[in-house]
Figure 1: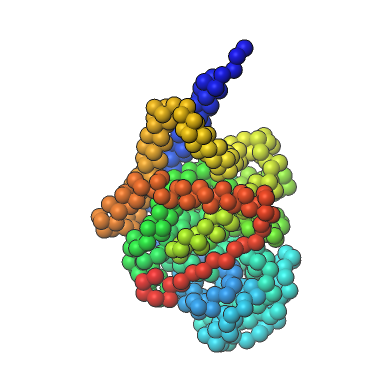
Figure 2: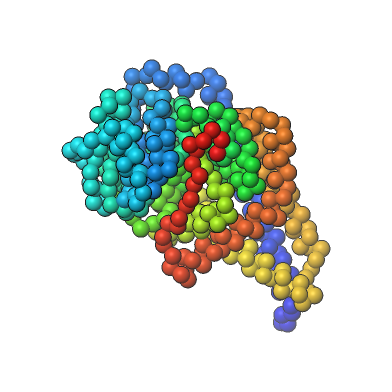
Length: 477
């Protein structure tokens, strides 16, 4: 049997086509499920307004835990924003994780803090706690400040959990802006689910860049001015509206954003809290909770998701900062899947082990080297004059058209359901950005993910990476 280059090339083309068909079918299926779930959520909200919960005597207490490291520039405004949240029973724990700036001094001065004795309610391992502060002002009686030695974000979150006194935990980034009814919407699944235990709930994150912010609230949603932030707006639409919503509906959600996640405290503590020495602590905890509920607790449970925009965060506006973020996300993802590789195709973990975990591994990780090798193969065969140009033009047209369709569908879903970008010109700009995204933003993102894989496997990089923010202490950020 003679094996020629033409036969090898033909086999490779068939493999590319099979992968493409598989990706298109899986993405399309998930998008359809997400749209159905989104529609059901909208109908439910229409007949059961979340504000009806405000007067309920069954509302569980919530502890909001927010780590802070060198946030002196905006820490006071950030805390004031969190304090303004509407909910009947909550406490706020700000964890100063060994900041080297004036974060702690500003908090002490702004909120009239004094050191107090404390009794932990949990014993998760953390770096030493130097002191715990509470305000002398009764208006801030539910505010607690922990000052501890630096241990990283996971360590800081664990320190806050150790001092929490409420049934539920809301773990957030200190610089996020939470919608006024955000806690009510997040707590709703914990109240309404009767047959299964709700262990975690996530929500939609939106980008606050260029929006008008007053008194810690977003009062006018604007499309970001920078092209890099606009691409991230599209990316967030796809991820939250047409991905996580679908997986939550199918009961296969593996990640809740570290910027906003509500958890059953008892389950988090029993699962071991946030894992130290890992940069993807948000995904790793959710996957570990799945394992705990199936291997140890052996109870029916739910990891849910709210498709409402509940939290606004500042997206990186600088390519260098964004590259470090995506590098960290890639490394954190790899750490999480390796730590829980036992779940891969394991029927013991049901739908999670047989579908969502393998799907996530393939789509978020294995596709990266496949795309890299595919690009290399095309360039090599093109330089040799052996490239089947019509086939790859067809392949490109299909990929581009499908990507554009999915992105436009996510824009349409956002516009129909929440209508935040109420200027028609903003929608036109987003659609134009969607058309050019594959040529500009995707190559950048792809390069950063490849570099993240390289840094993890060949450089052993494990640190977080410095993230600069401008803050939202101005009316427009």
